[in-house]
Length: 401
Image 1 (cartoon, helix red, strand yellow):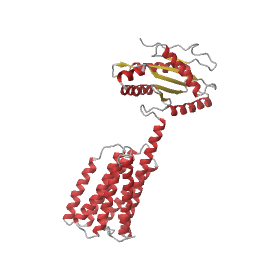
Image 2 (cartoon, rainbow, N blue to C red):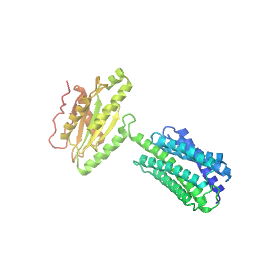
Image 3 (cartoon, rainbow, N blue to C red):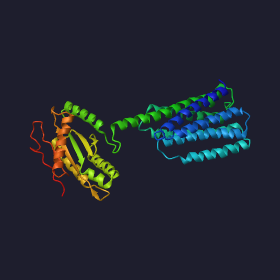
């Protein structure tokens, strides 16, 4: 393979990937934030390599300035795109690096400096930008090291190695690194290794986008869009699973159904935005009383449901007290007090009588008793396991005055 074929292959791959990443951004700009920079980067790199090939070794200063700066700024755009994709601010250091490279490289060319010092400058700047991209990708993918993340990291590591190899070769002058060199080692260093890195990098970036899309769809399928809590479907599935586990290991299980009192008045008097804000605030308070392992979800409208694994009826009173105390300290905008009512029901250890629907129905009965007796209270259903009941009839915790 000669330099012209290898360079043309790199250009073709870059342009194809530019079409793919640009198309993704046009279709889904919110989720694919940063893809526009990737598309621009790939066009710049293709233009830079094309400029070098068209120069054909003549060494026209203006052509080499444009070509080499296009490649460097393409790498910087890739770095910016990676940061934008991960909701991070632009790196000003990369901007400064690009400006310094333009000035330094142009000065070296216009003063007739030979190839190797210019190659050292170019490779050092590319090494720095690739290292910045690697650090950004490493931190951004710490939570999800998926196939796409590993492809991006591997490709950046390959490109870093390639630039280190160029720096060593240029320093020792052990290889003909002319852009139009026909030697096999030079073609590998100048074109084929970068081509492999570019392909892996571009595919990895596309995979990162699709993986993010899948994660977001899975999240939306199981979580409430307003509060971020589990939605009804996910909560029912979790509840049925927890009941199976409780029966298998003969552990108790309790559920609470919590409803915001007079929520329609909030919407009517203050508007639906205020109602949404109250829902978010109350969901945060409910989260604060939950232990690790408890499951909290929005069951519908202004109603929430909490699953308490390994909690029996006797422990529900303390949980109810904590719930009421937390909400009683809250008022919307510091002016509008908000209260809740709740009903608790328990599947005691060894009890095989209730499934999820029956357990929720029992908790609902207690909730409506609290609603019918002045609200701002909770009731606890009687223990039906054969042991002594918590109360013969559910007794409300006294509402605040």
